[in-house]
Every structure is written in structure tokens, then in C-alpha cells.
Image (cartoon, rainbow, N blue to C red; front, side, top):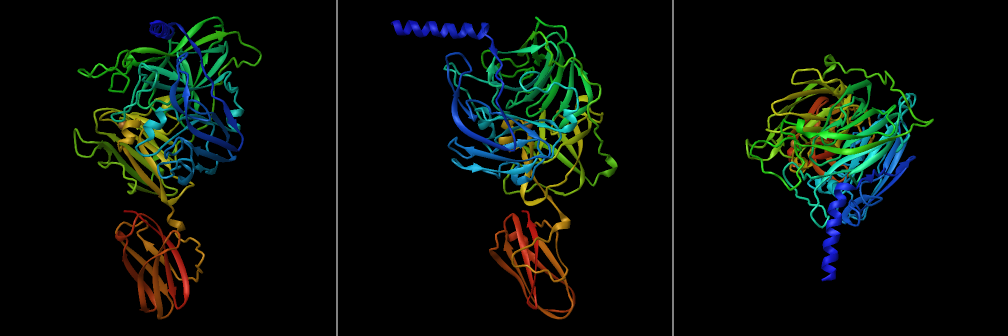
Length: 575
Ligand SMILES: [Cu+2]
């Protein structure tokens, strides 16, 4: 009886403390340098005083350290997976080779360590890292696997911006979580993705930040599985957005609202000069989200949601308690930031329609261009160096935040209109509304790989896991000759087309005299797959046709022997 009374009292205490207590915002630890050791493991995290919630974390109980990278450095990531099941870790927004990108093909088995190494090519901005295992991304992120990446460079360093991490340069990983009464996470796969009635920022429930009465820089990341936010200040004061997904904007953009879909980042400056002693709040004015955004005003007739549902309401993300400025405080906002050279439509090599739809009409699974994600299918093939326009057409009833790996893009137009000033910089996520077309332009530079694809997908993690994702490879048509241990180039012209090939493929070659010719196909590790031709051929141009539709997707080598002289070329097969 005493025990029961004690438990009852304790429960009441927790409920009261939810309303009254405020928790100092957690600032994730920092990792810097050129080697980054990250270990994913199950843990438990104290979201609510006295309660432990089962979680996953990187190097800790929930989320992960902030990685601070310098542009131009070559970094090694040692990512150890101790969660007891396979996963991957993707460097969201970064321009890295596909095998370093951490997409669904770069599986880290339970107990294994994955160590990609790459040069930081991106400009100063805010990226993030999170798992990307197909059909498990949503759950792994929800349990706590995510962290922020800050890239620094000389241009950003030369600007008089707040840049003291955790002091006036504040990471904010904004998420929502649904807790069941014993303070464990509720997680249901499916639909748009799990949403919650509790806002969690850097793993802190009901957070406050002590900010000095100068300029404070907030690095906003919507790290939620599916909730869209409408960020603003409680006094409706102007915020200055200085950065979007892929870098700084040309000039600070004044606004009172920033809509943020999952995966998007926005760096904002808040002017707290002269406001010492005041309290104000960073809010989400979700009552203003009326276009079917998850987390916005529910559609008429929608089910009510769980008790305490915050959809379509205005709620606090974080309280700012302003304290006196000191000698280190930045007190002014620069007028100019960086120069962004527009990619011109006249440079376009290809326009690629990307239709956000379903596999077979209303009630069928969401898809892109009518097909669901299949790890064995390459959906789009891009040529290295090309400038492309991707024409995103949403033909579903709800918006989708479209994200593409490898590149940053520039939005050309949204519904035929030029993008808002804060969407006119570099982006890697764009929210596309129903019946809307968003066109972006980009260049595919640096990384070609006919084997490992990059992803594009909806960043509502439920949709992504549900198959609203596709794969593209970047191929380099000018570099089909790959040195092979056995190869000796002897001047015979040999080409294979189309490359990549899907069904039938033609090899063409020129020989100076009538010769004995043998052509064989090997896989990427040198195993003999099949003989393509053997016999005598006449001088001049010859062709051999073979059926690529019989072999799996991947890179292969065609070896041609002409009177004992060996030539090898690569060919990529996409089925
Ligand atoms: Cu979606």
C-alpha cells in the first residue's frame, strides 16, 4: 500500500514537472580534426527527470556529436555499428563519392566498422548524418541516430558572424517524439512516418538557452521523421536567414517565418541587442500550415490523433533567456555574405522529369515515376559533367520534401514563380506541394561510378522506407578504359555501346589485318562470365553483339585478344 501510494505521488510529480520545469538545452559534444570515430549503440536517455527512455546514440545516449569539418581537409570516418543489426550512415548534403555516401548499399553489418575517407569539397554550411538502410531509416533515426555536421571554410571565417560553437553559434536538432506512459518511445512504421506530441531539441524536452544580448546564430535542422515546422519568434521579430541547406546565402534574408520540412537546414541570426533580461521563444506556428503538411492543420475529417496532439497548433520549440552581452559578442549583422553564381538554363544538357506519384493510382503505394525503390534497379543515368534540370511534379494529395544525394541544386522556379529569397541559395531538400512543379538546376561533377548509385527520395522517412525513392548512377563516358592487371593497350579502337547497357550491347573495334579475335566478359573482380566471340575477322571495322540482359547490374570488363594482343574496356550493365 505504501509502495502504491509512492508510485501515485511520483506520477503526479512527473506530470506537474512537464508543465513547470524547463531544461537547459543540451549542446552536443564536438569532434574536430581529420579522423572521426563514431560508435552507434543502444543506450538510454533522460528526456524526463527520473525516467530513462531506451534509445540509440552515436558515442552517447541520444543523437551524436557535432562534427566540425574544414573544407579542403581529407577526413576519415570510422563508423562502428553496435546496435545489433545492420545499418548505414549517410552524410546528408555532402558532395562525396557514392561509395563514401553511406546510402543503402554501404551496409555496416552488426559489429563492423565502416571507414570511408573523403575530401571535404563543400562550402561552409550545416549538414547532418543519419542512417539510410532501406526500410529501416525511419526507425534508426527515430531511436536517436542523427547528428549535425558543420563545415567551415575561409570565406565564412572572414565574415563577422557568430561562430563560437555552443555560445553564439547554436546547433538545434529539432524533432518530435511520441512517448508512451512509461516514457518509452512509441514507434509505428508506415504512413508518412511516426510523429509525436513532444518536441525534443538536441534531445532536450522543453529547452531553454541562455543567449547573450547580441547576435545569436541558430543552426536549425529539421531532424524529424515527418513533421513540418513553421519557425518564427514569439514576438514576431524579424529573423535573418543567412544559410540554406548547402551554404550561406548571398545576403541575409529578413523574414518572420521559415517553413522547414524534414531534412532541411536553415541558419538564422536573431538580434538580441538591448534585450538582456527578456525571455522570448523560438516557436512553430503550425496553425499556419494549411496545405496538408504533416504537423499542420489536419484535413477535415482526419482522425484526432493522440492526446496532446500538437498538429496545427502553435507551440514553443525553445525559450531564449537573454543575458548581458560580453566582449566576445557579435553585435551587428553583415550586409553581404557570399557570391552564388547562378547555373544558367542555357547550359542545360538534359531535362529530367521526376514525377512524385503512386505505382497505380489512388490507394496504391507512393512512388517516383510510377515505380517503387528497388535496390537492383538503376532508375536514372546521369553523365558526369552534365548540367541538368530536374522537374519535380507532385501528383499526390500531400506535399513531399524531395532530397537528392551527391549534389546541391538551385531552384529555378516553384509553380512557375522564382523561388523566395531564402530558397534562392544552395539546396538539397525542397518541399513540393500537391499539383505543384518545382524545377531545379544542378551540375553533376567529380564523382562517376557505374556500380554504386546515389539516391533521391522523399525525406518523410515513412515515405522513403515505403519505397518513395530512386537510384541514379553518374557515368563518365570519356573514361570507359580502365586499367586492368592483364590489360595491355595496343591501339585497337574498342568501344561498347550503349554504356551503360540494358539489353543488347554492341562492341565495335578496328583491326589492321585479318586476325584471330576472341572477346570475353569478366566481372569487376576478374571472374570469367562468358565468351562473347571467338573466330577470324577481316581487317577494318568489326562488331560483336552480345546480350547484356542476361547478367546482373554492375560493372564488367570486356577483354579482346587480337592475335595475342590484349585490350580491356569496362562496360556497365544496368537492368
Ligand atoms: Cu513523401
